[in-house]
Length: 183
Image (cartoon, rainbow, N blue to C red):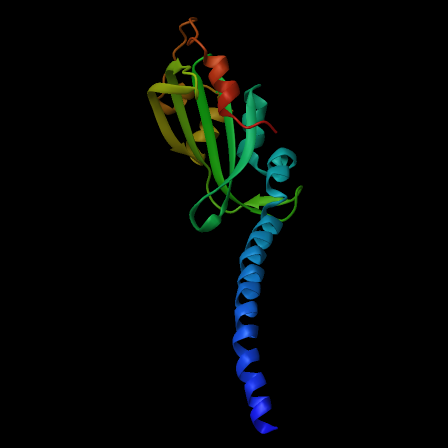
């Protein structure tokens, strides 16, 4: 009788292990995916609904009529609030700031905003993907942005001259439409 129990244990142990390992792996793997989704499911909604809580994004909306907002992820998966404005038929202004998102309508900045202003020189429209080449740009922080904002979008106050030639970059509107996610 003792031998029979030992045989059952010796047969059952590998069988249970064989079935248990894939089950535990599935729970852990899909649990991480599910947890990641749970943490991020409100993020794009916050980008659309929480603009008023991200001051530089709200300021960009006040100055530029073509401004979009979305979330990307930086170092250690920290959410980054992005605002991208297209203006002057040749300029792309991007603002990026780390944020803490509590819900689809609640969040706050947890770092300093960085700004990237680029002048588009040309737009290429090959069959697969639209691209652009740039002729110049500037990177700056929140302090200089406040100067630009107070000057109603005049980048001359921080030493960047906007090209006021009335000739737009060919296909700039196509590039701007393809480059930014829809909210």
